[in-house]
Length: 424
Image 1: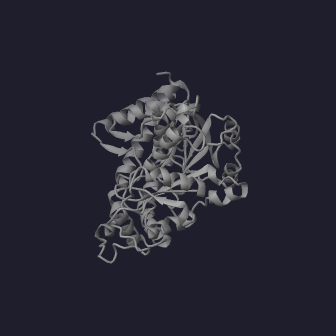
Image 2 (image 1 turned 90 degrees about the vertical axis):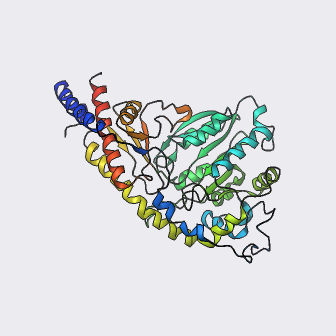
Image 3 (image 1 turned 45 degrees about the horizontal axis):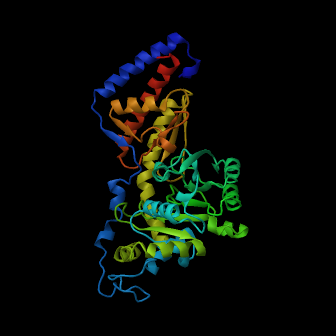
């Protein structure tokens, strides 16, 4: 098929007429397909069903340190479960605090407490300006936290090796820049894993603000697709070389390992930061669900247990990603109208239309019965300055629905591109 941009007007009109007929047929099918959020499928959730059957006997109520997990206390979490995160993140157990279901909740709390109490300096809310660097396209829920607290967000482009570090290094010279959101492995939505050089440049940052912190959201740290996964340097090990361990607050969870609605989250940080976070948490809670932590320990046991489970997840997820990529290649590969990522893990494919409006594509998909992540959501304030990016989330629907949804997406991209080229 000839590239659309090389067609003359007569060819474009003929192609648009054909595509519109196909689109009307699709609309008549009454489809209701959803690939808007990165949720585990029911089949993935069933992989952890044994967790629900994990019994705790009277002997199990006491962990190896002798703590009665039915009672108050244990703010940091049970050591057995902390050890699993310690192995995964390669961080000492003393530098980990376990939370509840959501790591997003831990991130929100951290930002909230910085607003009201600061980090050594005065509270952020009393300062004239508070700004955060945001790698784009990025994670909409990070942006939502910053927007909720009135933090100004500054876009920095994602590259194939991570955020544009030249831009980051310049921005941190401004003392009003207090932090940055990152998803360093299999980034949401691009799937990019930060290169060794990028991680080292993060560790070498010299921010003007002494209370600058990087939210290192390692949500997909074990979410590999195959036996040749991307490798991410341990930010704390690299930071030791530069004396910058305090700059980083790392988060992770079992949300996409066991149950999104019944998992465990954690925060990992330097000695100084952990001491501060623990003190603030002691005013907030008596402790999280230690019995759930014990059940997770009995079910997962160690990092090897986690990795065995993640291989089962991959066997369910990978065919869906392969199907989306197969359809994109087949339907759009020769048309020169878009480009997309080919992640080695994680939960998303980042799609960029190059010759049409992504919002128009979203409208057409919605009318045809396919729900996408809100176009623009991968940028702060829901404003994609180029109106190009669409986040594709293949994990939830079955393969046959994913295939149909991808075909509809491609049809809508064709239609929106032809309309744009013809000025309609």
